[in-house]
Length: 476
Image 1 (cartoon, rainbow, N blue to C red):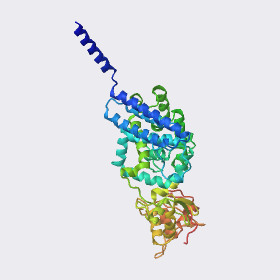
Image 2: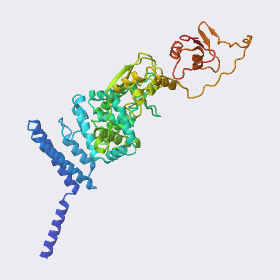
Image 3: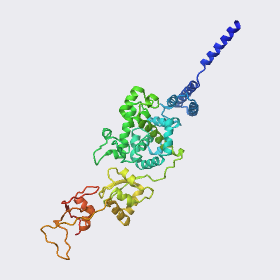
Image 4: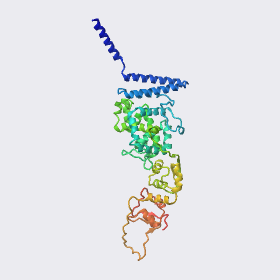
């Protein structure tokens, strides 16, 4: 009996020990917490003047990366817990540690504040450890690689207008690029079916709320500088409401700020938690990782095999020395220094002009420095300049001959004599079937002056039968 009692006791004791043994993920969480505390203690000592603590901080970061690798091998390990630990470790510090993403070309921008560092750290964290973001990185590097590269180049020419607006707002430039790439690919005149427009796709009502005039002919949503300013203000408003949650703020930009406030109030601010994630529509669940992935590749694209073109993006301007249009300039400039030509660049930098709209002499246009010399050489006179003018003014549909006029109560012209067009005190009355180009040729007119004196509207400069045309600037 005594033997049985001892055996039973030992079995119970072994069961108790087994029950007390922590699960693998719980032990990993405990190690994560020790690492967080080690980093924070080293930080406090560093802040007090002990620079040797940088080594301890770097060691803690390396330890946390080991914990992350171990977590990914455990199905039961919570990715949210890992990210939370990593974020707590570095979240409140202002020093540029290895865990903090650096903006490119920092010498070209003023000092980066703590908000930039905080959001940059979050972007790095997600790029390294979040699978939807990693999948989105893969997407940008494969089927959407050409789109990404096109967006990157478009942005480089607009960067001097857009990046300072984000810097002044205390936000990371990479976030601006990520949102612009997903929204429009850097095409300033992009418009969605729903009516959102511009490089950052503002709806009319939202645009007005953030200072963008959306009236016809002066829609500020197309202007890269003002669009970036409005976007920065919008995102800071979301960060203020959503406790600086990067993913929730991005989700609000796509899925609606009202929905973001409701979900945050009801379910919290961790976008990747199932109860929060499923509250967003599929489009937003795709949008958030795509923006973060594009932002990360903007900073570290070369690490993934992206080779960015070495072009001169130096901003400049030139003054039109003769009336022209974006289309005409694109043709006469050719494609030096840019294999795809300059149409998109000129449109993005001068967003308030339509492609075939005549722009008056003396107008100052934004352009890269490389174009100024080419404009002087190829767009003022000579065969290419004239060819560009002819091609840009050509109609898409043929010009059909005007029907023979019926002469009523008028003598026919004498045999061998050609009847001259009827003019009255320097005016000509348009007949059915006639076009402006026909009148130009008949009276040998300067087309630009003919357009200006008769106040004709682009793009087609339509004239109507019975309309009186002033023949000013005509030689016949």
